[in-house]
Amino acid sequence: MSFDSLGLSAELLRAVAEQGYSDPTPVQRQAIPVILEGRDILAGAQTGTGKTAGFTLPLLQRLSAEKPAGAGRPVRALILTPTRELAAQVGASVKDYGRHLPLRSTVIFGGVGINPQISELRRGVDILIATPGRLLDHMNQRTVDLSRVEILVLDEADRMLDMGFIHDIRKVLAVLPAKRQTLLFSATFSDEIRALADKLLNSPVPIDVARRNTAVESVTQMVYPVDRVRKRELLSHLIKIEEWSQVLVFTRTKHGANRLAQQLEDDGIQSAAIHGNKSQSARTKALADFKQGKVRVLVATDIAARGIDIDQLPHVVNYELPNVAEDYVHRIGRTGRAGNSGEAVSLVCVDETGLLQGIERLLKRRLPTLVIPEFTPDPRIAAEPIINGRNSNGRSQRPPSQARPNPGAPRQEGRRKPGARTQSSGRAQGSHGNR
Ligand code: AMP
Image 1 (cartoon, helix red, strand yellow):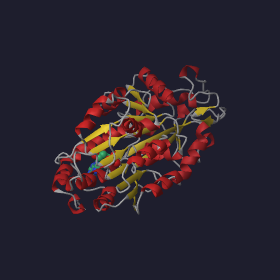
Image 2 (image 1 turned 135 degrees about the horizontal axis):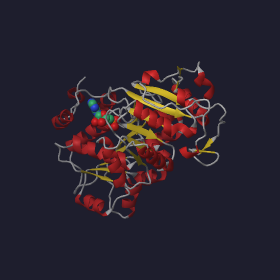
Image 3 (image 1 turned 180 degrees about the vertical axis):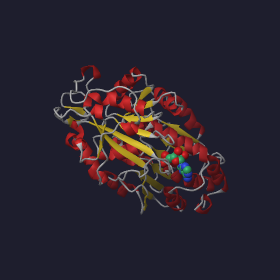
Image 4 (image 1 turned 135 degrees about the vertical axis):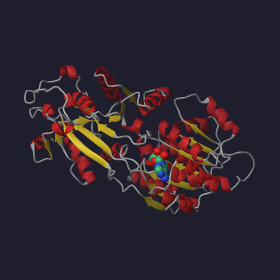
């Protein structure tokens, strides 16, 4: 099936062709005709499925097909996203796909000056892409008028709820016209999301392309058992020996992200951290450096990584397993996109056995395990429970200078090819008891 048969206008087809897309993705095939009909949708689609074009293309077509009722240039479409990165990325897509149409769009998010946003809004925009917090600031200052919105998109609605935006979203909904088209995208469907969907959507067409909670098939997954104090060393080892050039590494905490990026730098691996405490310009720079290959490793927390869009990201590392099993699926969805194969590696210490089991239950399968001989976990180390992302003693990982010696596994230095370094794979062997 080609884009031509979806009912899109010549201007949009031209923009799509200029992006180099030949065929629509499954979410695009399903969503575009339904949105063009004016129906509401409830879509289960993760980042990487092409969902942004899936809602942006028909949205642009609907707005360009009809003039707004009444005078002036009102905001006619509102796209809410959980993070600044995602807002910026969706804003760029709206500009790309709408380049041959006379529609105006702008992106507003926090962490940057509000005045340029006010000027933009004053000039008039048809499509507004916003994070909930900053949008509320504008509503409070009466610098935005949402009373003539025709289409509302909630992108990554589950993440917006996770981030505590529900009250902000309710306040935004309260000022929107009741008669409108609403498109809700979410990677997961908790009871809370379903309740929100019931309230918001009018006979929605369900669209489910990502097969909920199922890890992308093109991603190879691997678990490396390792003591918690030796994770950094193992990560450096893997990056060097496997010659990984672009690696996205997940940590549980912002502090952990900073520390790990610094430690990798100390190991001679160019790294940067990206998380919510960093300024917008620092985050944008880190991402740009990573995309351009100036930085080899980007260390991120789940929330900060949410909006990152990088084509063909080959390697994702779970330096620490996420507390919520669904986040594992989000994380590994960052690789193996658009037909490219990817690799997702998890460094798992004895404390995380329960988290790993939770992930395997969700995936309905066990993950392959590989013990690297010189990183064989010390069986004498007892598990420490992880509470709120930290061990019971308050640390997320002990600095390497305090690493306990591992008499059972003397370190071996030197380069070896990946194929030669493995000792076991699968639970039947030595790795099993350490999990
Ligand atoms: P998204 O899921 O919207 O974040 O999109 C993921 C990536 O897929 C983006 O880099 C898009 O540029 C790309 N993409 C979207 N639609 C298509 C398509 N039909 N063919 C190839 N790539 C696409």
